[in-house]
Length: 419
Image 1 (cartoon, one colour):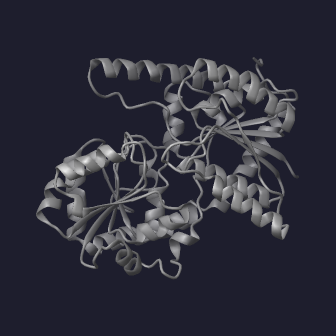
Image 2 (cartoon, rainbow, N blue to C red):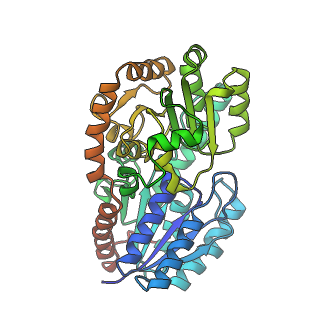
Image 3 (tube, rainbow, N blue to C red):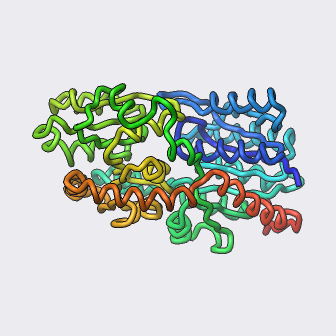
């Protein structure tokens, strides 16, 4: 049965949740569904997923294999809390969109789009099946001085109330990791029966098999990295809570002592200038390679140049870079947060260290440096597991069942009270 599906995401920047959303849209379009994607204005150094969607639309229009994805930019949908813009987004942008599209299913992504989108869909007539995906926790780590901690607790409290409100206006909540379900239930958000885990899907083939010119040796030569260099890489926005400072703290002495050690930072973000100044102040400029933004299709090549993927992120749903690295044959070292342990299984597919423990982070990387056979064993084990668990086709197939169940509730008008 063909469905009209409306996805709503706050920002269509380059990122894990956005890639997940776009792959869902593409897969559903190829199945014959009428797919719409709404998003807020795209700006900043993180890049955009729009070129990918435009290329998909051009291809399917040319060969007639599917209908293109219909795009809707919502001018008032912004990431930060903004009472005026949030009011306009709900009462103008989203209500109008529901009337125009009349979707069978509304599938929201990220916290802001998730709260406003679910609310608008729940009040639509007729009510569609309403689905929300938790890609990562909106709750920030409580850290810093007393004033900072008080502000974070206040913001986390507001997010908790908003998520409880939205969960009551939703048929199904999809978690990309079991850890997300537990975190939300611990905050009394939703009912256990609402939750289902659907692993974040990705295109596994480009990570499993290198294209011509994208082998480890060729990419290293392109980046000016020798075959004997030990490369610790990251694939993440240069932004708060991604852990680039922790990596400098963990490996600063090693980088100064061993000039054949390199850091390869793939990505860009608002913290780029500050981080690169710190690199300069530490005297490590020759050993830190910052690629800036690279097209998503080049990420597998960048990963193959690494010996270890470091992912010291402070908050995650299920970090896509971890299974992607394993698919490339690269062992991850990561902080044990949220859903990370569901891909980076300590001692089996990688190494996990306690959150914020830069000493343990450095020790784990040094141990893997000295044990290439162990690196290869962990990566090989993870490669086989991830190829099965994280494919985009498996995710799209699972969402078909999710939508069917949500529609059954919607047709029964299973709403304890709209509003």
